[in-house]
Amino acid sequence: MEASQKADTHRKGRVPGLFWQFFKFGCYTFGGGWSIVAQMQKEYVQKRGWLTEEDLLDITSVGRSLPGLMIGNVSYLFGYHVAGFPGAIACVTGMCIPPLLILTAVTWFYTQVRDNPYVSRAMVGVRATVVPIITSAALGLRKAALTDRFGYVILLLGFVLYLFFGMNCITIVLLGGLLGFLLSLWREHRKGGSDHGTP
Image (cartoon, rainbow, N blue to C red; front, side, top):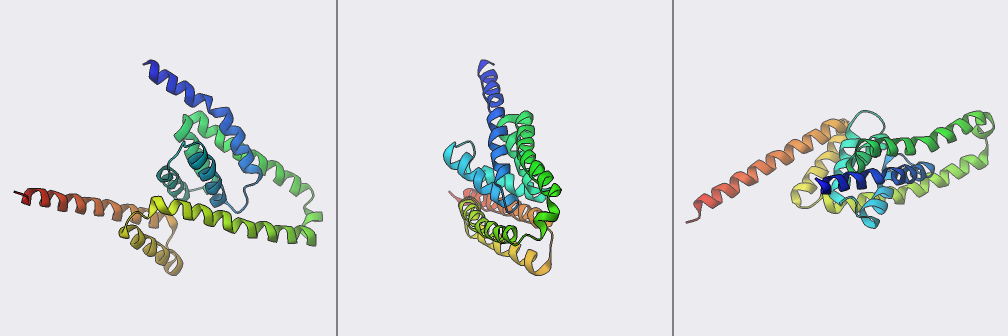
């Protein structure tokens, strides 16, 4: 009982730090939800060890598949994973405040900023720097996602369905989950048959 209370207290103690960290993420997260995945991987997988690569991949997959903005979904799921409901609220709130303030300021000065060539050129540079950040996150998650040949088959199938057939992300994720479940059943069945056949 005491151990459970200590663990709960420890999780609640993370909430202020989560708010501040996601506030900082919100200040310089360009390029949508994938760039926050790269930052979370560096901060919470590599540096603090709060998540495994598999945990982050699961959170990202679910957050990407649910309705709404990926960046908000991922923030909420991560916060809930590490600090319960207060952590989820802290992460989402921290992430949303900076863009809200920035958008408010940009709206006030929109007419001046809209046709400014210097601002346009700066945004071209910002968008270009997002590419290596997203690529880094994808390569980091690859080790957790592609553990055998079956993973590469699912990866290729997902690309084909998305790029050439226009299938939505939710359907692709559900299909991948179904195929993984069926593969697990098949392997268990084969293993059971192998065990029974052993004298």
